[in-house]
Length: 551
Image (cartoon, rainbow, N blue to C red; front, side):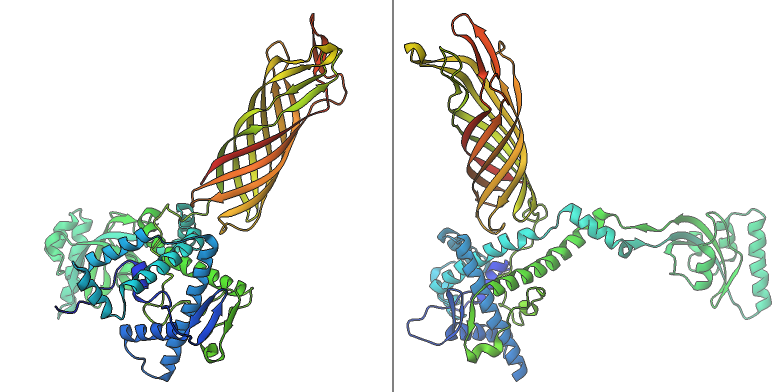
């Protein structure tokens, strides 16, 4: 059987695969070149990467090129270790099904039908099936980290692209144009005869003849057969003598004779088009492609540099010459990001599709349901009623959040509880509870939310403090009350994906009722007169959860 070499895949993740995106396992103790947080870079991993680069591009031309290549490869291994370590923190993995799907696609792309042929092709490139799976797993995991932490922050929304378009608008300038027709009378051997022909053409036009007739009678130019029509020309394309004249003429006028090295020209302006600019819709794809690449490389450089500054990296003396330490915090430039060798970019990811994962989400909407603990509104109302309260019941509502900064959100809250006013009869030996009125409690509040960590963390703790108004609506025989209220609480938010998450929390929700004990009351022939809102505050707690959509 003929040895089969795997074709280089077009997908960056498979390109990364053939570059050996992970260090091979070792069975014996070997030299460690670097510690990167909890990971190590071994001599064998570095040698394998170097050999792979030599196979792909050939040996370096000289010793200086060898050092450049080794430096690029060593720093690439450092970057991979940082990204793999970050993947562990974010709990990002590539599962077995995804790996097998990639292997199947690789076989299809290379038209390999049997496992034996596939293993032989891998062997020709210094790989085994197990090594291939390990490399696919690591490359896919690294790709997930970069996609979440870097690619998602590349802003290629229409608004961002339009701002770039306006800033660079002059580069899309379309110069002034004119559609011209000409009569060219060539310089002959006899200047006097030439002048007579020029004057005859001028006289013919001034007598009212059509320009096309004068062209037919006198023009020596190549445009004679089409009435002298030169088509559309931009300012600056013609000889300077003609250009200066024709762009100063109105439409449907003929110039005076213009002398050039070719002869005499009578030029008619048929149409004009003023200075214009290519529309945004025409250049949007060009700007998008450029910004995807330039923004991604810039943000990737900044991200890797931050990982380096935050990491614990120890490099062995024999590898110190190849290591590029992180720049100071105020300078996030990372010049070693562009590898010198193919296969040194296992962190590459596919280009962003417009409208997908390219936006930095700023609004979150969370429909919620919960359980509202009860509260007391009146105590020692009269000799029959000891207490009037609000029993516990289910609650529901929604929040809308707008991100102000990395750790601060503006939060709007609506919460509803469908409950009742309930009297507790314990005086005079009665000893039972009875509903006095149905009660709706609607709370509308606005405030701030403080979050832990940053947007790269899947789980974030939060505290929120809000103020607003609460509407207490009993049955029609009672009057509604609108009162100042607040809420204070906290919980945890978890991001399942870029657009989707969940929230679990607990809040205390006090409502101001009265400044005096009289309150709001009613009288009945059975229970006498009592206040149904007699205490100063209605104090309740609310345990809630909900699913979050991000926009």
